[in-house]
Image (cartoon, rainbow, N blue to C red; front, side, top):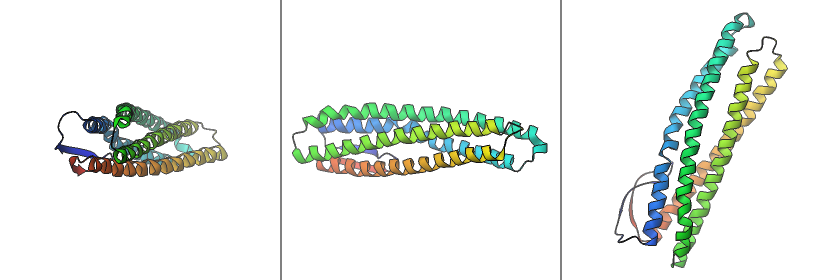
Length: 210
């Protein structure tokens, strides 16, 4: 999660440092929707997994029930897609706000402070780019899952076709895990650099949580 700032003091006027702080914390606020979707997405993933478990426990003599469950799972995938869209919009808004600090960093006169700010900016760019890859991987997995449930509604489905599709999905899941790890690592590094920037700028900032 992004670093959450609750209090800032000992800053007078709208100095360049304060302007940067304001944009950084507004970027955090704009990611609240992104953070709030995480639990919802996880719940939907759990529901879908439970349905899939029910499907694989059924035999072909219960094909109508398989079709019904497959359609239900497809509906859940569509719900997940809607949540992911909200998540993406939140990140995009955060990125737009964050990018406003680029010209302000160039205005900094303190060489050491500017160096920290440049590192912070570069790390956040890596984080946003990492999210783009994560988002793309997640959308790809949703597409492949929908294809799986479409296949499960075919009475003449061959085991080889089913296995190939499941393998594709598992590969997508692994890519999601890898990209998510990168995203979390970049987030952690960014938060460290952000703290360093505030310290270097002599800002009295209290941290509630990370």
